[in-house]
Image 1: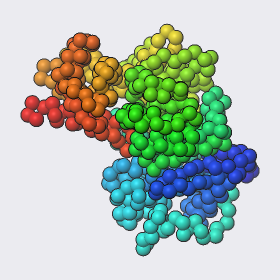
Image 2: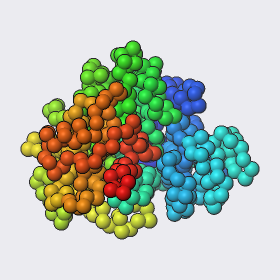
Image 3: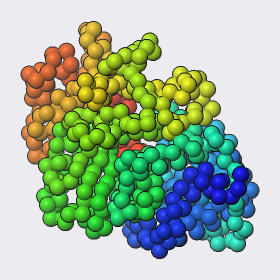
Image 4: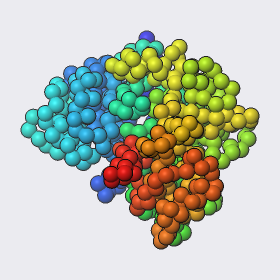
Length: 520
């Protein structure tokens, strides 16, 4: 296999054509550190090649796993794709995880190299200092015994020819949590990722004149799959924020004339608290916004649409290890509110009952396509349970209507029985959202002396609202089935978020269980 074939099979070179066509065009505007840094396509390409040369000089070989604990900054992009150009497998680590979890993930993956950004995690420097791996590198700081990123990048090193890539070779390793509650490393392949980039551009093409805005963590699929790869592949650009803050996010949309942005529900819920400020900004370039990666209510979509009536607002559904199998139909049919779409072309789907038998209209969604991960690293039992003959069991329960549109019901392990009745948290959340004073809500089961389990809710209300928990209970009893009304409601100023910017449902359930306990 020649060098050109090796490049075409390597995700690290996926935007070669954009570099060739638009070498001097700005690809990334990085706002890390309160200053603006611009990177052209040519500069990005050169920096990624320098990363590959640096890693090879330091002894990293094709197939080695390299740990990345880096925040939202252009160095993340450089290192991520540059490492793959050398044939290495980057581990995308959640910057919000506890030190002991991060160390365990790095150790379990037998990493030979780690790069650490002290600005993204207060324990990053101490982890780098004590972790037992061959090479440890820091961004921005010099520390005895640790390599410096910029210093090592400046050392002359021979260019690295792209190594041969096998058909099912692993490209990188993001982490996802699920029913086990601990992070699992999904083994994503070069072939699958390259297929998906071209697939997206074929059916839902990104525009080289488009400009995205990223405020969610880069280690999360919402940013990488939804903006970074489509924009670089198409020759577009994106603005990279170090983190999400509602007013700064709105400012960036206006200042940089962004045409679209993607985010989780919490992003949109929070900026809707600044509607008056929103009205002062020129967002005429903004064309679309997509909400996904977690449960999205029809009411939230409607609120965003009312606040920004000139843009297209969509719900999305996707998985770290399985892609986005539900999309707006390519025949142009409108997607009903509450649905992320219908079966995407070239992707196989089926619904399964609790015994694993295929059903017609409701069950656990299973997906098969080249994107699906090849397995979970060092997790043979989980791999066996979730993957069979290329099919991935998503753990998500869906209903499919007669027109072929899918509606999320619950996680398989979220649904619970209340006195013999099945309760789906999303349905109760939708009911709460129907109240005009409710901004956000999460429903979870808590122990109940009579029913076994009963719904409880943590609710965020609009500023200035005087609604009480009892008012909301009454509303739910009047508008929905009695068995599913929340027996306990905690009204809070803000819902806790996890490292990926999603609402932290596990923490919320723990708080609701503690607060609703008779001894509390």
